[in-house]
Image (tube, rainbow, N blue to C red; front, side):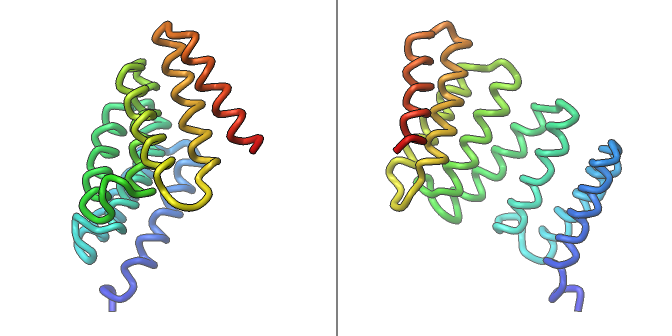
Length: 168
């Protein structure tokens, strides 16, 4: 029966973790999320979307603890899983690469952050459908990284592109 309900149990554990986080108890939040991750690995496999989502949830909590190296390591795991499942030119992979860029920016690794955001833009611009909001976010993040690298001119261009996309 637990096998049939593991997704519901995992979702409940994620909610319990959120409650701990909202109370500032990040250690308990991470402990509960570890349980959700382990449950996903047991019943869905370590290369499944459900497992990847459980990992992704953990980055929120580690990010609140400023543990960006852990966030980067976990996000790299998620990227590898999504690459295997969806391919490098997928929305899921592109979004994960965007998140990776954010964590690198938090560590002041603006060169890597810029590369991640450029890749995310490339992926999302090639996807069908309306991806303007996500492309705009990535251009804004790219602008920030370029600005911090001292490339003010291209940072400004990226910021302007971000704004123009939203105005379309």
